[in-house]
Length: 141
Image (cartoon, rainbow, N blue to C red; front, top):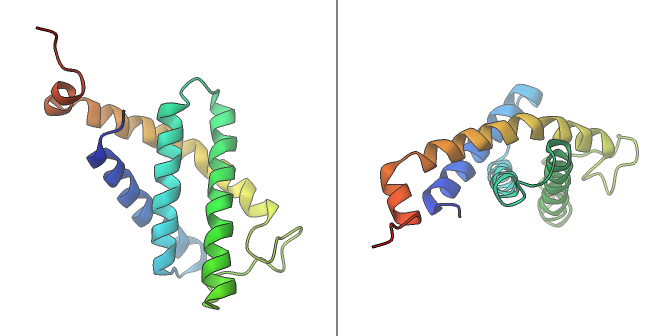
């Protein structure tokens, strides 16, 4: 079971981390990318915990698919409905309405690997707190 504080922490790390990554990659970001980044890292974290039986490469595929789906839905709202022009993959090969494309899905696949390791580390840190262990694993009388 994931602690609420752990999930909130993971969301915040994903939000800040993705915005920093975007600023480094393209020199700018948008507040909606913080939401998308937080959702994505939280989803990857939950996958890492609850699908622990999956091999690492399958977890990476799930993570890349999750990020691509979040990117698609975010793009539909932010770019196509609201016309905020946050990004446009129209020039990319096999793009879908300019919102997702295979190249960036590959980038998400590569990004998922270090995120899975970071997720495992975060989970170990949260489970090492004595108060968390007592609340989640009550001792029998």
